[in-house]
Image 1: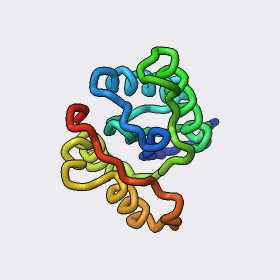
Image 2 (image 1 turned 90 degrees about the vertical axis):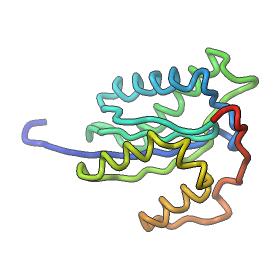
Image 3 (image 1 turned 90 degrees about the horizontal axis):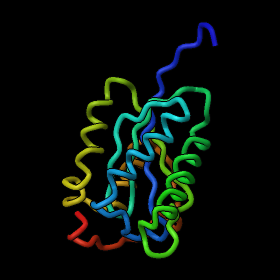
Length: 159
């Protein structure tokens, strides 16, 4: 589109169904590369991705040609299908319904990228629930405690 200029940076957070801790160190980098392909295939730019055994953080530079919900649906659907086809988990893999999406200005990108890349270090001090509710509060996002995720313990071998 002529004379249309945008700068949209979105931080997505989503979790494994039932908060199962199934994303293993042995294949998580392959998952992030696969997700990068999905993002790039939709003409966006993946700026950072990382996570823990039960959840993932993705920072994307978005084009306005696709809605946030459609991009998240493509990422979650495509990566779930890939994980299942590769038989990376016992049983059936799926992401839990829903996601968090937070926007950032260009001036905050370095801070957000550092935050995403240091997830393991960050989660030695703070649980996922604490992290997620802090994001929701910081962005003034209304939420109902009944629909938040239940705490789980991480297997130290997967950190």
